[in-house]
Structure formats: C-alpha cells, structure tokens
Length: 243
Image (cartoon, rainbow, N blue to C red; front, side, top):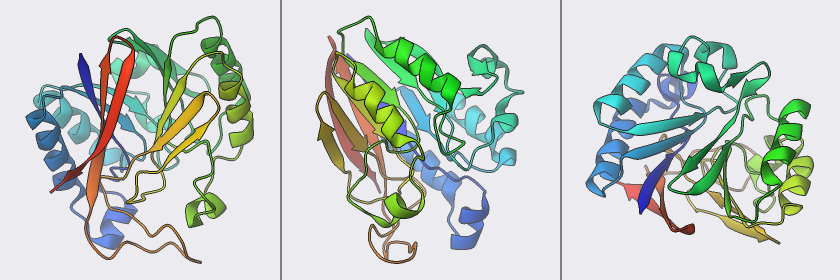
C-alpha cells in the first residue's frame, strides 16, 4: 500500500506571497510535517511552485524530510527555470515537462499545462499513453480539465484546450482519475464524466472565493493537501486540512 500527498499551488516567495503577506514556506513545511505524521513519504507537486529563487529551497526541503517527489508545472511556472536541475533532465522535452511513472503498480501521467494549454505534441503523447491498457490511470495536471461549475476561475483562467484533453481521456477504455489544483478553492470539488473523474485539491498557499465578479481571497486561512492511497490498483483519496 502506497500513500501519496498531492500538494498544489505553493506560491513560494512569489508576487502572490508578497501581495497577500503569506508565509508560504511555513505553510509548505507544515504540510510536509502533517503528511509525514500520517505515514506519507511520496509527494506530487502539481504546479505554481513559486519564484525561481525558491526552487532550491523547495527541493532541498523535500529531500531533507525524506520524501520521494514528482513535479508538475503550472501557469506561474516557466520551463526554463527548471532546466538546470539534474533530476529533471531525463523528463524534459522540447515543449514541456511531461512524463509517465508507475507508482505501486498504478500508471501515472504527469502533464505540463504551464502554457495554459496542452500543446499539440503533448496531446499526441497523451493519446499514445492512454491507449493499450485497461488498467486504471492517474493523471496529475495543474489545470482542471472539466469545468467546475461556472466559477470565477473557470470563466477567467481555464485550460484553453480542455475539450481536446477531455476527448482523449473520455475515449480511453479505462478508468481515469485526474488530480489537479490551480483554482484555490476551499471545497474539494469532484466531477465525474463517463470513465473519468476529476478531483480538485485546495492550495497550501490559501484559497479564493469560488463565485463573484473578481478574484477575492477567502476570509479565513485554510490550507490543505490531498492524500491518495494506492493498493492493488484500488484508489482511495481525501483532502487533509493542515492546521
């Protein structure tokens, strides 16, 4: 049995952390401590990691705490800022950081939506990856693929070619679970469409209000990560609040 922490939207030392006066580093350290206390030693970071000057600290902190980890890029991340890290070299492609891994017998795909879309070459790669197996598939991507209910972020900052990604995943002859972030919503929205379910995870930086005309922060401090448990290709998941 393997337990994984999906941690998303860290925003370490970036313009959001400065503007909203958030100690995003402390939030992240608290999240690692909570995950460790629950027997987790694998983390998947699903984008908007933080300012380039924070990356060394981020990766050193994860390793110092004994975590195996995997990285996905978000719209506030730039591919060029990650190209000098040796551990990422085998995973980098000309058009993005996307790759596949098998975790405890479960096939996992890690997509790059840092351009606010999944590019044409990556889409072809995705089509090949989802074909040829009936086993359950886990997809980790920064942006939600399915609309989360005409929310403010769905209207202003969606994945631009979400319909193309949806068609590929719906067309797969297998069960697909999408784990995403990006929207900073307190409610862990789950959407099912055919063989695909999408699970939206709150941010460790802080949340925004789902509805309204403008992006506004939630009134209280709430940070959380998602716990994913894999055993014999069976998947259980829940969102864990970090105090």
